[in-house]
Amino acid sequence: MSIKPERVQFNGGELSPWLEGRTDIAKFNKTAKLCQNFIPLAEGSLKRRGGFKVAACGAEGDSIKFSVCPNPPYADVYLNEVKTKNVFVTEGDTVTIDVYADGFEPYHTEVTVSADKPDLTVTLNGLSPVVTVKLAVEPPWATVTLNGVNATETIAPINSDIAYTAKYHHENTFYYTEHGIVHADTDKTVPITLHQIMDMYNGFGSWGKINDFIHCTYVFDGTKFEKCFWIKFENGCLPLRFDMTLDYPEVIREEDFLLGCSDKVNSVMKIDGKWQGVTVTEENECFVWKTNKTLQVYDKQKLAELNWPKKNGRFCLFDDSYDGTPAWGGLYVWKNAKPVWIWKGRENGGR
Image 1: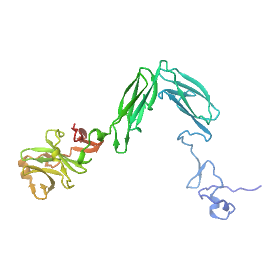
Image 2: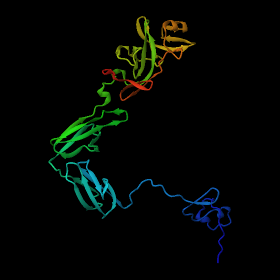
Image 3: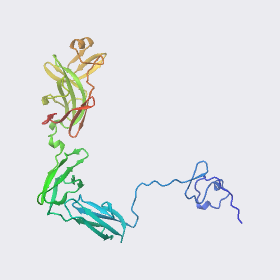
Image 4: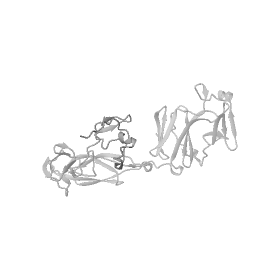
């Protein structure tokens, strides 16, 4: 009788079948030809493998996906007494089908599944006369639901109501969602047009799109202080000045737009009776306003005389309680993390 030596170490890795007879090499006694349902450990011993985690139930290789398409599309479908519109079966299996919808006669049948006809369309008979309702949506690739189910066409009992929703967005192109009720009093096709957000608000014309909300700064016209939103557009900047007691501008002065404004310009100042774009900075505890031709400096004494706005006991150039972001074709502004202003375009003003 042959003697089989005991093996206690299995961390030698995998050997080629060509080395099965090489009992003289060091790794031979650290390997096994077949290790089934065990996992080698780094220390050399083995442990039983764990159980498998169920990720999903998939179809077998020879299974057929059998589907039922009901009309109306929002009808409830039961296959083999389970609420579903699809089931995986083997060719020749029998499937029990039940379909229900309010206002229609229940449908019941049994079918033998064939690979040639994996789909079945079931049209219910109405308890009263039925009509066909179709939604013609523009753009045609919009997502449409009828009574909560994706579809653009349905039958319905006469004089019933059908709830619809149509929506679409793609990358940076957004449309307003349309929803409502269609009264099914006769066969009809209902046109639905989704409005693009930029089209609805006429955009900002020659200014281009909004690039960023830069900040809210304080400005002085010689007699009073004002807040000023500094908004960066594709083709320039717009300073929106408004009263210190307000949270947002109530008047849009389009004539203040600075076409081709430099990125260095970040505020405005009244010079010779006219508002001009300036670069404002804080240097050596002084506020400095610069243009290509002028320089204005206010030290602490001057700021105190003007009663310049303070925060935490220090004079400040900016009101950092504001934040804003361009979105959905317009500008959304928050103050202390609460929304205070939405601006949708030059023709729309703000609200």
